[in-house]
Length: 424
Image (tube, rainbow, N blue to C red; front, side, top):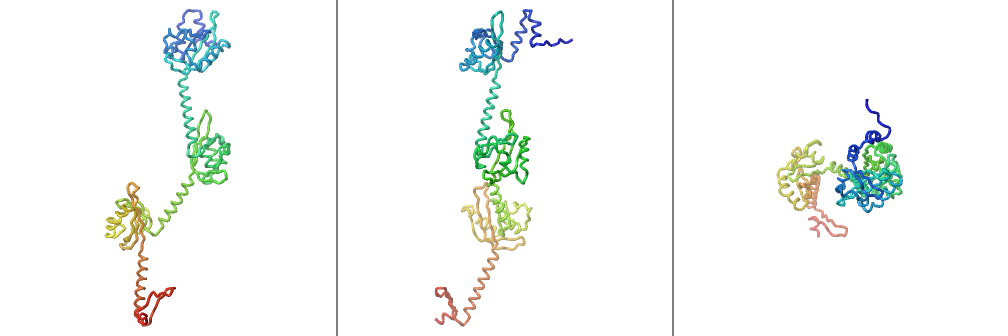
């Protein structure tokens, strides 16, 4: 039958060894301690210790005997250690956090305890110490991490907000203050409803719920300024823990300028896509990288056509292709721009007179060219008709017998037909 545990700690050991001279168990217990063990007299002199004390201190056992507590700690902690020893002999026990000085001068942080015992009328202090090196390293690592967090938090270009899980703002960085055009003191204790409006009409409670439940959050929304105006922002949030407390970190980036630029680009793309001019971008080999609808319509390509399969010869008659490749492109590469008359060839093989601009973009790698080509066939038709009209009018005026004179507003003669010249 198993022995029943005794009521008091250590009672089992006392019942078996208190009346014997066998100290092996006592020594084993002392040397099995994970930390150091020591015995001091009322003068603070070291009377006994365990093997761990010898290993940590770097002293030989005979060197340790008689050393005082002052010798074995850092001068900055001697007063605190002295008070703790005095308290042990006065009240019965005490503890202190102080470094133990090794023989080589190295300091090791320890949590030291002491308890008063009386043997044969003499009073002693027995105690243990736990090495705090790992704990101190962890504390330093935590402090460094907190310092890095604070530095990143304060210096971030994005607005940073620290909320409690109840949705109350407890800290924010200077960038956030600038976003709201308000001071830190004015914004502290604000709620999520005071600061943000979710995108697409979603209720603000969705953000509040994410904060309360510690769920990650991402999306666009409107950020409310102190004057009640607002701007578009990207909002990200994630739960975090600091010093054992639960918080929620929200990051906000002002994207109003980006969205405005995107709208301008969309408007520009709409114009480019719907203009009657051919607009294209090609590489140095003449492969198309972009082609607008007018260009695709010219060669009979639909919206799904891979424009990279289209080359310069697909747009021009052979002699014009040779001119573009041999003269126009090299001139654009050298001067940055080339302007001139060319001709297009449509899907039916018709030649269309054109006015063309080629721009070189040498900063791109690899180099690319953009071009704008305008169909000038209608303009040339009108010019031809005007020229024909002038020629017909000249023939008519030259053949009539009446004199015809044209003068400007100042009375200066601009034109006289042959009959008029005969009269003068």
